Amino acid sequence: MPAPKLDFHRLISQIPEHLGDMPTESARPIEHFRFDASGYWNLLRYFERKTTDGYPAPRERHVLRLRSMVVLGLVETFERFVKETAAICVDQLAGRVLDDRFAALSINSRSIVAHFEERTLGKALCEADIWLNTGEINARFGRLLSDPFKSPSFKLFPEPDQKKDPDQWRRVAIDILWQLRHSIAHNSGVITRSDAAKLRLLRRGAVDGHKVLQLTSGDVWYVKLFLDDLASWANARIAARLAEVLATIHADDNTLFAPSGVADSLAQVFRETITLAGASGTPR
Image 1 (cartoon, one colour):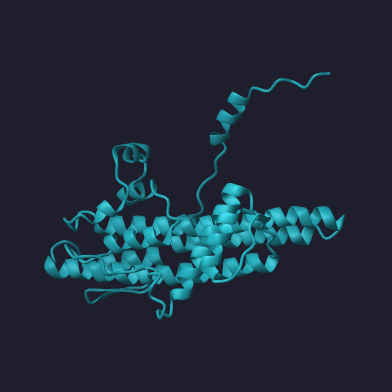
Image 2 (cartoon, helix red, strand yellow; image 1 turned 30 degrees about the horizontal axis):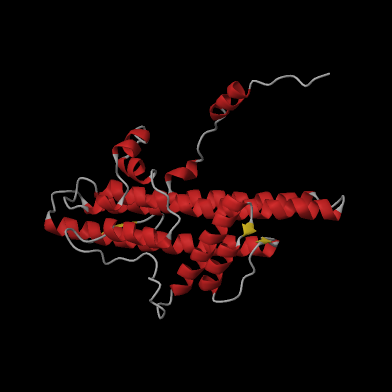
């Protein structure tokens, strides 16, 4: 008997209807990151605990694929965190500055129309961009968080030539993860020879090309721990710098906003203690 003919157009078109509510953590980027990062790691641990029986070889094949998928999810969760944090910066600065800092974002009519339904200007502007390149992230945050009408001075990540910066290792590590994410997302985990050449330069050590990535559970755990640390570090740096910029704006025109209210708002969304123009805000 022939297999029934499926209406793929109808079936695929229905997929976007299968939706659930956002978690309450989604209102705070750092908590949103931690919620999903823990979820990906727990997925892997659940699978490993529940599949101790059976044939070892098929289990290992499946868990190797799952580990790559979890690393991909962890890196993309960090990308979303960066994007959501940038959106908060836009929302806090829009209407309070008249310079061209928002030109750092890819603003065009097509992206604005596509994201018109977003509830904030920051989301509309930041959702259109890809945030998977350390240099581009530095350029965007540097411009967003510059003093009014001044050249950028803030660097979220150290520049490649800043070898003596104590946080340089963070940039190297995330650049390696961006590259591994590319190999997993676009080549199903294959490390091409060109990928290997890039990784060799980043880690300053040999990497074989034309190979398949085979991650251990330890590899995945270290990626999660590193990204947990990196997100907390970046969150604190961005929050502190945003507060500095807002304090500078307030010093120039103290009628724009009440520092106490803004400090409290920032403390809740960043989950950090904020000091702004003499006012303090504490997470509740």
